[in-house]
Length: 454
Image 1: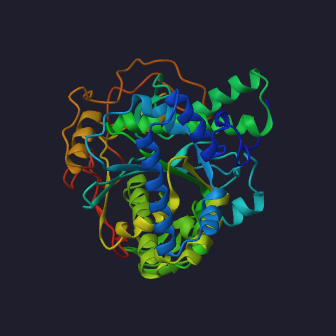
Image 2: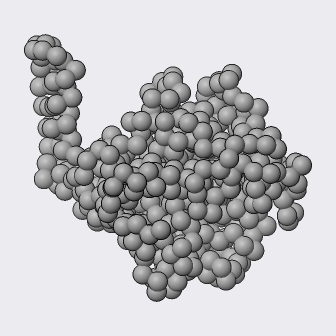
Image 3: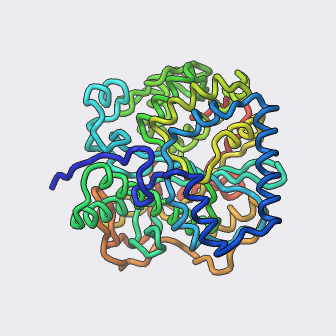
């Protein structure tokens, strides 16, 4: 069944996952909570905050008109409002930001990207591939004291309990399928209720975001404060603005699937090559593990370039970058992008360490190859890195027994069907359990330059 597709335009209602008039909505909510006259202390506080904000804008050279231009057209989501109700407790003022890379050949309106563009530039097959699975999941923990940022990459084929936005279980699937499972289920429900067009696509994607946030939050045992989502087209457009991107390879590679064809050593990539660089997994000893390290190295190279070229301190350059981001990026409605962009300079200069959560070997679940994981072990590793104790309620493993719940609706998803007797070694020279670097998979990628990877 084909339904009308399309994403809600900026300014659509909350159900569509987009922010309406923020100040007006905030005033209405404040009146509702107050239930009467506003106390004088609150009025005084608002005046002080307003004057302080005006002073900051004036001294930083950022005009109100420029601020409104940068922030006014961003695609925003309220997915965290629902997910936050079941979030673990925050122990300090640190911030956890989840980066979501959507493996979709669709634009922001849910329409197929042009066939020629997908095949020639993205080198990503047809628009039917990828669906609404997440190809990249990286949680960045920004400590309250300004110390080293710890980033945690989650391999997309990790076999975990996936959740819906309300905390209910979808069953056990690859973690990348939490988004697509929820998207498909929500789309079917909304269509039955008569929702069509922009609202149908927007509501379905919002359910996907909620599910991804809830699943990652539960899997790692930490609350998520902010998130940013980008698809393949968005990645390409950002690389186009920032090109050329410098990367470094330990060995020459050639892969007809991704289009990667690079010599060893330091080199500069155009947008098409950059996408091939981060998407390659065939022909690499570590497969998806090496691809994850490529993604980390790419982010390190981009932040290094942004810092060295002064983009974080130049409003004009920021406007150029945000112009692209407005078209392709979705952020949570509580993320103040100007403030975050000005603080983002602190994430460069070697202040970020990328870690990849370990797996316990490959196995077959529901006739698909997955990566088994030990959730208790992963939670303990993550908590140790960010300086807190792992939750005592963490289960020993997120991989279920041989019988599990029936699958949720998904295109190409793996349900909780029959399973193999147990883990089997992954192909290639790698170990069955990949955790040589302090328990994490592979060597940590240190940000602060152009790291060399496989």
